[in-house]
Image 1: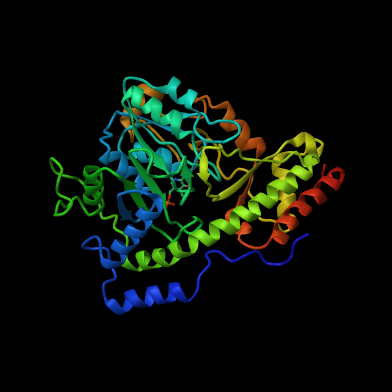
Image 2: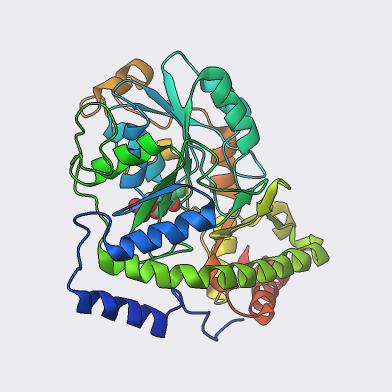
Length: 406
Ligand SMILES: Cc1ncc(COP(=O)(O)O)c(C=O)c1O
């Protein structure tokens, strides 16, 4: 179906070249002492977009989760509630602290953390909850903030997919106690690698800055009690310069994506026979962001064709897509999430010697991950409505040829 190339990602041009050249010529390439002039400028612009008073830039969106949890007071043995359907970093961050990641189920339509499942998972050891604003949606921040208040929990939003999103007018990353962002290559805002923590809380920001800068405790981020045991997780000035250039592109990119996503939604509504439904966006999302466009597939609409065969066929038609972009974290113990009590002894009380696929019951995450989700990268939606029409035409062609596929 589709042979023409898709829009390039990341978009780049003279602004990025100028930013990198500016940093090279300045001779101030590294992140020490933080923040350098490029990092300071980026942090200010990013904080203004989100509505957060503090932004602490860091090396990536994995360390930002760990740093933020530590700064929030999470310690060995504490329980941290995370969704089972996410990138492994969300669950790895508490494990790195020797805290216990408690994997809970997601909602079948938003694919984000299910507040009822969170409530059921709370114990006297629960210290924090990490909602992930997954794909194109946001977690139910009203319900989760209420629960956090009732039970005295800290909330860290994992905003790796949600740069610029808003919930009831409040920026993702500025609703909970802190937000964590990734600027890795595939993300909505990128410098190849990078991350940031956002917060309104002065002391939390100081602690994060200290943890990112080897535990140094220097003015102006020395206003907290006790020593700090950190790492060098600083962002470089080269990356900060690139991020400022990319940030300026974000509003226009977001508008293009949303236009094309609205077109996709309308076309899918015109073709109910495809049975493909976009991930639900709560109406309380007042400004959406779309990192992955997630469609829910129904095999019955394709005479029982398994989701994976549908995704293969879509790719063969020239539409890049993923089926199991994420699978439940507990199913990844044989590859990139081998969580054992030998390495992380505090998990023993909850999981015994090791986390296994049977340790956790998340039927919704399992079902959607293995049978229903079709993930399309946001880069496909940066072009024209004709691109979107090609995607739907490929789906219609697959449906027409489904007997041959079966
Ligand atoms: C939900 C989520 N959290 C955290 C991360 C980690 O970010 P990074 O790749 O920058 O370490 C990612 C991205 O890979 C992600 O998708």
